[in-house]
Image (cartoon, rainbow, N blue to C red; front, side, top):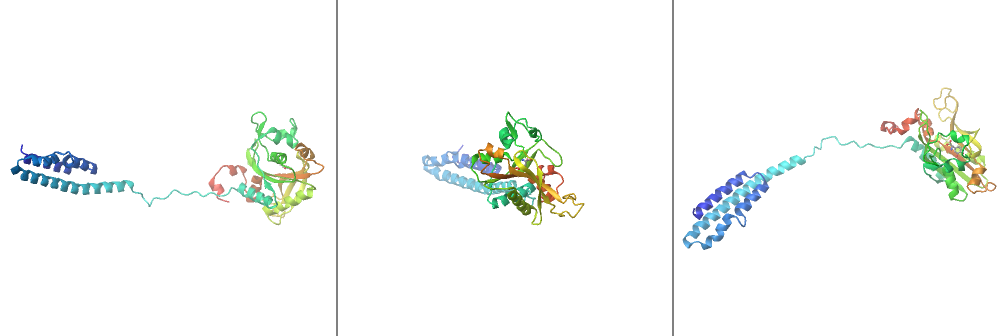
Length: 342
Ligand code: DAH
């Protein structure tokens, strides 16, 4: 076979390889194979100078022509293959901007948290400090230090969740009183919001609920200070017109102990069918009292020098009354439809 014939064969082979190449990378291999540095056609061109002079022109011309043709065909095919590839890629990456987006669920403040914030803000405004304590509490802080010694019947009324030896889920926020007094000298003015736990579940009780404890210890504090402070708090939370009254009650860690009622913020006592107070005119709000001297002694304060008052309230209960919610369990089910009503 002459060089010219071989060139013709390579040209035809290359052109048909170009025509059947389906992708830009196929075309690149075709280019390397027929026009690359070690392609046969390239070798032929390199060897032209070794040919007899009378053959050089013909072989040179034929090989240049074949090279040009192959290059032209590669170029043309590359354009159309590349365009197809680009289209396919765009189709695959397409985003349908008309599809509906993922809805963004907006949160809202939980009704209990609204009450907690209002109460805490009120006391912070009076100069109280916010104190917190652990939810897993020792028997000592939850009971003994609060004047409820081991074996005392008052313990039985608390529906306590017992954990390991000596540990309980705190049944009230009152242990934070003890922790606070043990960690500082008087005067003390603290308000202590937090979660509390009791084995109880019905429309008005849930095993986990919120409490806010308050404690003031100073020289010369009286029941009058307690009543005035809590009356101002009730006006802040339930409105300027509400009145408060104290009823005698009993809690181990205060003496005297009282319960505080707030006049009905809805009917003020005028509606015998009132949904909020059920005609009573008063709503039970919280327990309170003057800190028992035994408790002050327990934490190393001198009851001859200092007196104090304490109170504990249930912000969940307060939110139920305030918003007219019949079932406390709704508070902890996390249903957004419930939350969005506030
Ligand atoms: N710890 C009481 C309870 O959970 C509430 C309470 C009553 C707290 C009287 C007090 C208080 O600080 O003085 O039932």
